[in-house]
Length: 262
Image (cartoon, rainbow, N blue to C red; front, side):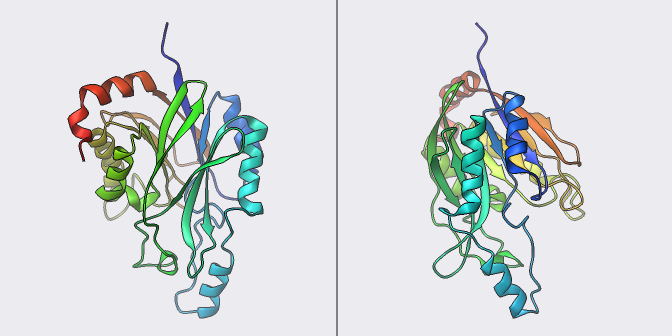
């Protein structure tokens, strides 16, 4: 019998989409997880660094994890029977966090991740606090239980966060993103190469959800544990569907165990 594949939908969309409708479209493709781009609650908007009023207004738009914004994604998960990685500017005690949650198909939040390596050198994330840890959750799917971790955008460029996920037993790493992936004028497609290397070094499947043009350059993509690109989207708004063979990932993790010693 052929192994059952885990289908992951990468929502390469702007933040004005109908959340329930895009989740329904993902479910119709057979996807069991949908991943939204980084800081979807405000579309990764920026503030005027010369204006304190602008900065404070941006911070005031932060939302709590138990509020109405996240509830929209919990409702969509329950209604459509799929897991959702929702992203948002999270209300914090002093500064907001750049956050993501993994919601299972019953609408329960099973993983809460705050971006650890915030872009403190530029707007808007110079106004954010950094997360302090990374963890892994076991997600029940029709393809079986899968160990899932989250890296948020620049977290993928630093070994500590990925190593924490490896130590936690991650099989799939999901990456909400907001930046140019394939045609950055300064660095080209080095970010794609970095995720390929991360997957190979850690023996995991990885999937990146990015905003389309004109905000970013789209090119949401997924790679297998050998760093092979499984699928890559175009630059337009679309759902990009990745297929992961969990059996292959587990055999590779067993055979290539030495790559996961951290």
